[in-house]
Image (cartoon, rainbow, N blue to C red; front, side):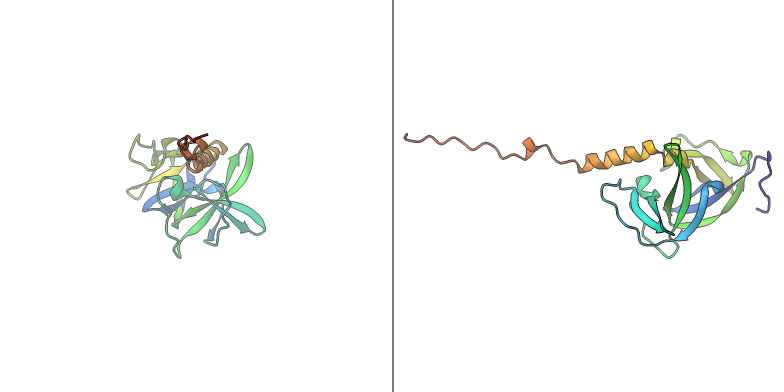
Length: 186
């Protein structure tokens, strides 16, 4: 890992982290910082995968729980849990988001020969969210495509799915059945 990124050399740096026993990585140039877990302020109406927001030196930073995003139950918070603060393009603007991870592992250097296309099945992550599978020390690491994983369309899709699951039951289903007519002597 003593190799540096050479212009035209084709090698790229990735930050790897663990989530539910799987190793994932994101492009290092997208990572602004790594901070220890801190309390998250919940925001009503947000999708389940958006845990809430944190205060990062006076800025409001939304936090995405990747485990929930990938359809897993929320992960327990441990002393190794942290937020990877990343920049993504949302609606054409660079936006800062926090990714909740179980633990950060290391910085990896991968070249084109170290990256395989993602398998058609067998991962928890939808294929369009993967850049590929990075080969490192006889294991594979899922390389995430942050712009697709955290796109505005994807976040809106999550919000719509949350809204549908919380939608009220139609009023006619809640209405009491009509009372039987009582005939009088009238």
